[in-house]
Image (cartoon, rainbow, N blue to C red; front, side, top):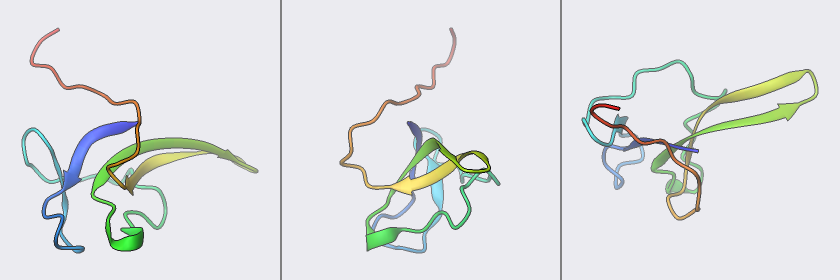
Length: 79
C-alpha cells in the first residue's frame, strides 16, 4: 500500500524520503530491516507492506518502484 512518501531527488540514490504533500522528511523507525535499499537504483516510492514468515508477522516501510499498481492512503484536511 502506497503511503504518500517519495525520494526527494529521484536522480540521487542517496537522497532522503519526504512526504509528498508537505515535502518534510520521513523520520521513522518503521522501515523493514535492510530498507530502504533502492534495489536496481529506481525505488523512489514508499509502501507499507505486511507479510508472514515462519516465526511471526513482519511489516514495515519499503522503498519500491513507482510503476506498480497498489492500493493507497489519502491525506485530507478534514473528515
